[in-house]
Length: 433
Image (cartoon, rainbow, N blue to C red; front, side, top):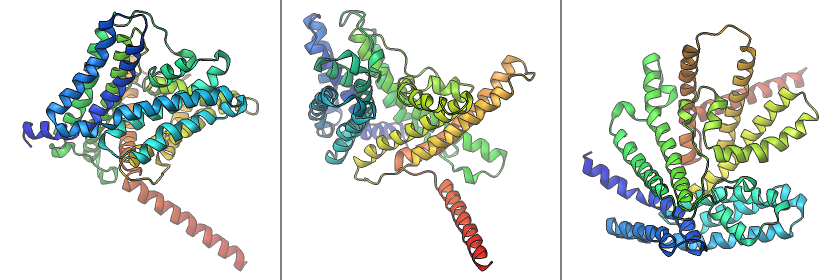
């Protein structure tokens, strides 16, 4: 494949990247247009950037405009859904809201309906947006019980503010357009998204970097080849998330808001806890407040502190995996595949078990003599990278097709058949006795 072929292939995959940029930019452009304390030039600049994006897409490929045509209509639909969530929070009983009614309504309105009824290549990024809006809807319902927010607060938080926790939403620290360095961050995020596609397409031409299955490993050399083949997928997954976060942080900075970083170099983590504190900090904070804390409070009344904390963390991982299954189903449903799977739930359960075991090993090894800090951290980082590569090998097929890798499914099927055969033999033996 020549460099020109790579460019053509990247442009053929551009509805997703352009859809992300357009759909993430529309809320900020609308917020800027209705902002009261801003100069006209500052108000119009985000809208002009969106218009330039559409003109550039039409210039590159006229068909892209057709693919992205549903974006403004879906944005208006999401605005109506945000008002519906606000009405639900005003009139529904508090016990119903705390029980997750807004989260269920958000998944239905923001994820399920767009995924089922809009079938265009540019709709997938809107499902991701809707999935995050559903999480924000739950926070809005729980934290807004005391604040009594207005419908303007609902629109700005659910559609503009990306931090997912209503009580911790940032306040405006500078006038709109005063800090245009946010525009450079938006450009960086766009380049990251498009560069990710180019990198994956180019890497696909290198035979020894193509994805390998773990069951094909026959020795140390095979395992090294497996790890190297997973690194581009892991880097591509990180670039997709990091590019999206850069677009959000950049636009919020243009509007005068300072956000905490969403990804704090997670590939430098040395423990699972360190990794999850660095990876997607906004969703991590949401999980901590609305999953871990409620489950932890319930378990602390019945169990000692450490077992309760471990079980609360495991339950949070499982619930987070189920939410990821909802989002992954929405992405697959945009292409007509409407079967729901719980592969992410199983994967996050395994991650939660590994997290708990790692924490237990760390606590037991705290009193033992250690190697020098540099060597200890280097060894921990190498072990963590191996673990992350294995998780990436499990997660990428789940994200694409909704299923774990074939070798894992074959192993699970064989284990299930072995267990069922053992149970049948035991029951027949007990019946004969």
